[in-house]
Image (cartoon, rainbow, N blue to C red):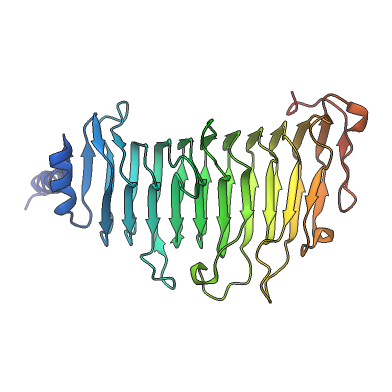
Length: 357
């Protein structure tokens, strides 16, 4: 075959394969039919409109579900869970809206196979809203995922956690917005627990995002840890370049063994600035320890924050490090210097900086 004809043949073959792999969904009936007939590697493109929630997909690899028109995202409303994906490696969800579920908006898990995480899931420009509205009902629940990416998502109104990681590893949450709403109980914005490790949370914006906007650790029953036998709720977490506004505290460190909270902007926490806690008290578990808090801009009001760091029993606050943070008690600048469990290295107190407005 001549080179030009071969290139033409290759182009046509590739184009036909791509078209064959794409399924256009235009209504609820075609959505149900497409989900029943799923094959690995397929792409579902969903037309604008409203669709019911309550869908479940299991054991399909390299699946993509996305809006046909990214500017008009389809809306999946109601049901107990919008979508539940179990053991679906290399799953991509893009430009979708999920709203009004009573249990979880999205549930992504390893099917209970705790020793074999699901790899390569990507959530991109997903909006999840009005989940619960009370009790432990999450907007995005992730269990047993590895190398996941949650990018540029918007979450507003949830009962439990906005994003809940249980035993997830080597993953990234970036560019997301989490917004609390009246009438939703919202215990945490992002929670990282159950043996979770090596997670980066960056460039996110939290607005009144629950009791603990970022919960580094938590409390997990032993049967749910991934890997089994882990003796920390979380380890090696990085929280950087985020903005955290409102809520009773900016972040809680709860049974975490190693974390960095760096270059964040904190504005007006309502009761404490940080919390150091130990909720999993079983023998052999590491105490909450080895946390670096550095280069943050923290603005608060002394009329609200009287205990700067809430320290619970069973923790190791002496292992925390504070470096070069800028602290401003806006209503009482002369009282800006916080009471910390250890001396801070090169802290700045009572001065208005670029990150404190």
